[in-house]
Image (spheres, rainbow, N blue to C red):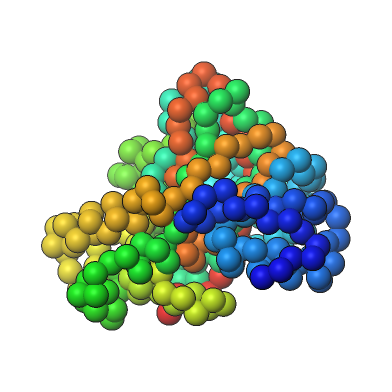
Length: 284
C-alpha cells in the first residue's frame, strides 16, 4: 500500500514497523485512521515514538478500533477502568508478561489488539518481543496443518486468578489482582487452534503458553507434547521482532495474529506502562 499521510518503516523481516507523521493525542481523522489500520494489518504490530498522551487520549485512540476491555482480574488505573497499569518497581524480581502469550485468549471474545504506552522505562532492557503467527502456521508441514485444521483448544485464566496457581504466576507484586477475582472458578473457553483473521482472511496459529491448557477432548498430559512443540514453534527467531522502548513510545499489536513476550532484564530499575485493550470477536 502507498501511504499518503503517515510514514511506515519496517523494523524486521517478520513483522513490526515504526509509524511517523502522526500525533495520537489529536483527532487523527478518517484518512489517517485508515492508513494506521492498514499498517497494522500489514505489519501486525506498529510503534509510535514521542507521543504525549493523557489517559483519556489513550482511550480515545483505542476506541477508534472498537470497544475497550475491562480486565477481569487486574486492578485498573484509578478512575480509568479501561486502563491496565503494567508496573515493575526496582525491588520486584518478576514482571508481568514474561512468557509468550496473546492477551486474554481465555475470554469468549478475546482481544482484537492492545495499545501499550510507556511512562517510564529502564536505562536499558525491558524490551518487548513479538512473533508472527501467520508465519508460524504457514511454516508448519502440510500434514501438521491438516491435522490441526479442525482441532480446538481450551484456554483458561487460572494462571492469573486461581488461588492454587496465582502464587506461581510470572509477575511482580506491583501488578495486583483484584481480591474478588481470586476464585477457584476459571474463565474457560474453547477456540480453534488455527483461526482465520476476520479482516485479512489469513490463517494463523492460535495457542499460547500462558492460557492454552489442553486440546479439546484430551487430558493435559495427552496434550502436552504437541502443545510444547507448537509453543516453541510459534516463537522461532525468524518469526519475531524486538522493540526497544523509550519514554512516550506506543506499541499497538494485533492479538489475533501475534504473540508477545516482555523481557525481564533490568533488575533494580522501574518500568511503568499503561495498557488499553480493544475487544475483539470470537475466533473462527
